[in-house]
Length: 185
Ligand code: IMP
Ligand code: MG
Image 1 (spheres, rainbow, N blue to C red):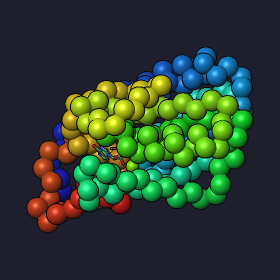
Image 2: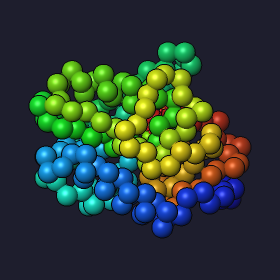
Image 3: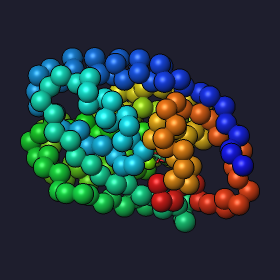
């Protein structure tokens, strides 16, 4: 039994947003070298597409973020690196799939700032401003959306549906999935 979904953002609209964001970032960072810190797993497609419209010398780092919300009020975010990102004195752009409570981003900013990058900015494909629990703002946003749960183009539900080319609203959740949607992403 497949999930009940409704299309929200088409492939074409995603491509247009990637180009628009790329133009802005190319302008703002000029020809200065830039390090993309792509947050796994959700931002992998977006990061790959964005990287290919950027025109400055790029390096790419990947970081895995996992949030645990057993205690709602003290949501805790854990990072795992594939390798130590070298970002001291570099311009750094964090690439996220979606900004919701803001906890992942806030923790990531704190973590990366310790390594003293020259400049630290955030680009997110999606933003759900209604979900915000801690102050967090993106410098570059693809789409602001209402408080839907969305899947596709990297975004998962319980590790599924990342491969869908476009973004869909998940309207019903499988009854078996007594899953904490915020765990293990
Ligand atoms: P937050 O801003 O710390 O709450 O977390 C952002 C992360 O939550 C994202 O990187 C996603 O992994 C996950 N997330 C939030 N909303 C959704 C959604 O609608 N679909 C899929 N994942 C989501
Ligand atoms: Mg994620």
